[in-house]
Length: 525
Ligand code: HEC
Ligand code: HEC
Image (cartoon, rainbow, N blue to C red; front, side, top):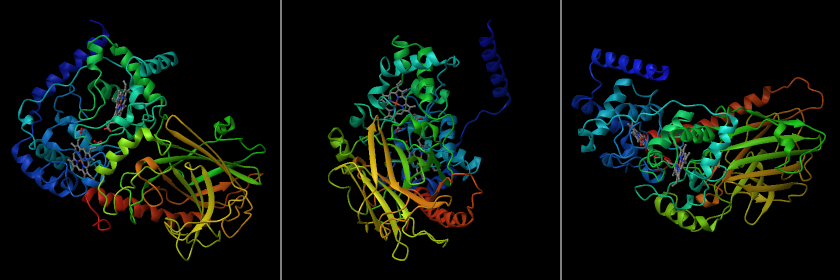
């Protein structure tokens, strides 16, 4: 007996001992009765009173909350087409489904309540009356060298055809992506494989392997067990694909910092693809849907922005990169867009009839003062206006102007501000540069060196029906332009200011959480 087999054999023995020693993990009718109370309070707003996935809030969401009557589950350790085990349901209820509105419940419900609610959701389908299926067994991860990663990439593009849906860069923009619908005929996006922290079933190599092995039932994502059995691909090769997919995301999920640092340089980069950018650490800015005033966005098209900055004492250059499947409008996505329009109900009115342009807004306070009270993060207000740089791709252009709230933007003279935009493999890379001394102080502030300056962003994906107000927004951050010789950084006033801004984001997050958890919020109804 070789060692690996012995180990698994040993584990099986240990399991068997445990199983005979402990009462079997079986949920009872009593649990289900208690689970109904938990469900009605916490789950029905999205999943519906009868489990049909049609709660009050469901119509604003995509992906839609699961319809439990069909007993089709994505996150399983069981074969494609089979029911999940209680452990599988437990995992998804504990962790939630990142990248969707399904929250994690570990911190909010007791272990008992979570067990009870599992027992209850199983009562929505008679299929659960049968014996629980066994988990699929598979071998150990053989590991992967750099050469193996190259082979994983080849398999991803050729033998397994992941590329057809997930695209060359893995950002969910493959040629088949605009044709995808789920089992309920809702439009569905192929996952962005460069953001493993958003994977529904976890982001480790083994999680990814498992998803490929058993599929995501109810979605077009296939199970590759058949491909292994048909000899199209070996189990070992499937592990290489999992390693390759893992390598598309950063080693750790991005850490959010309050300050974007603009490094001082004597030679500014020539464009967003200039290799000198590789020397500058990108700051990750998370974006959330704007749900404070209509038209709102509950499911933002873009969920984060990578920002880099450099300056030479005269000009500031920013590089902004974000994932977006489409260079909007994109006629390949017309049919998908109409399906999206028909799917998302909106109290603020339907999505625009046709796809609009992609758009990015950089926002500063119009006046930089020592006053710690900052303009309202959603485009300022009458007392404290903001200055905005607004870039759009169709027609290509950029303007500078002021605003006193969403929808009030008035463009001024963009004199002195330049940009270069590049779209490839489901990603925008935009370089914007401006003089530190504003040519026209009535539309833009001059930027001091050595003092943190508040900055905020908004990003709209035109193929997702977004624009000025139905948009993804950030809170206030700060940008700090390095001084020639490093001196102590005084961030005192700005920290106070950011606290105020942080409250702004808190409002967004908690409003969203309320929408998520309660299934509706007062601003909607
Ligand atoms: C027919 C289209 C299609 C093909 C082919 C396909 N996928 Fe997917 N994949 C999807 C869709 C759609 C989703 C998103 C499901 C969702 O939103 O719940 C997805 C999701 C994923 C996820 C995220 C899983 C999670 O936990 O959320 C990973 C990882 C993934 N696919 C990897 C792959 C790999 C690797 C291949 C090739 C071996 C592949 N996919 C082939 C359509 C496809
Ligand atoms: C804010 C809305 C919302 C609330 C509240 C919510 N869910 Fe969900 N849930 C979703 C969405 C959306 C999905 C589907 C996500 C996807 O397909 O990627 C989902 C999916 C699920 C799934 C399917 C997992 C799978 O493997 O396919 C389970 C189980 C589930 N929810 C259980 C619950 C339970 C239990 C509660 C209450 C404790 C709850 N949900 C509350 C939105 C919600």
